[in-house]
Amino acid sequence: MSPEFLLTSLVIVASPGTGALFTIAAGLTRGGRASLLAAFACTLGIVPHLLAAMLGLAALLHASALAFEIVKYAGVAYLLWMAWQTLREHGALKVEAGADRRSARRVLIDGVAINVLNPKLSIFFVAFLPQFIAVGEPSPLARMLALSGVFMAMTFVVFALYGLFAAAMRDRVIGRPRVMAWLRRSFAAAFVALGAKLALTER
Image 1: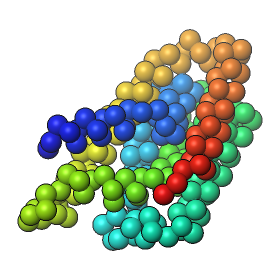
Image 2: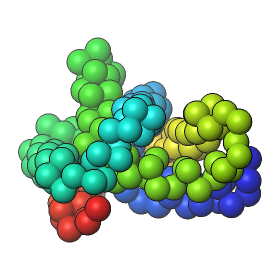
Image 3: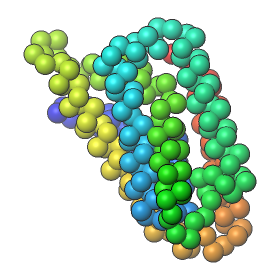
Image 4: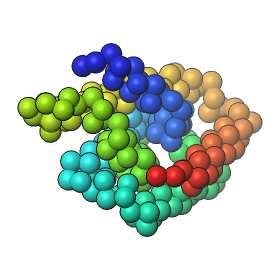
């Protein structure tokens, strides 16, 4: 595994984005277990993009302006919905005293959806990963799977660290209404900003 691939992947994964934001929110309001579930869900949301790239669907998404716009604006709408839910205390920053099945299911669904509805991930697998596959590679598919596996593992580890750190700060945050109100507004604004950034994204 080349150092260039590892370093670039780490920069991409560690950069603040919707997945990291969602995992941090899960850690703050639901605790360490939920933050790990959120990190897993966001990582799981990468799988459809990998499959799309392997089946050539990502190339179609990259080539078709309409397909790209449909997925992009679905992602924008979902982020705006997340922002609204956060402000209403029903979304990412809904405080849970304990993790029940419904709460865990909600974390899993939202985490997967956040990454599934990000068309840039498909483009990532089409434009970025092939750069690290040699022209004479005897098994390019196996090589792509290996690189994707490393990228996904890095995603889970980095997001889990974000979430566990947030969970460690949980007790200092949820007992302070003013702090929670400020966090809800901040996270909602961040979801809106990420949605706007996605809306302005070109193929």
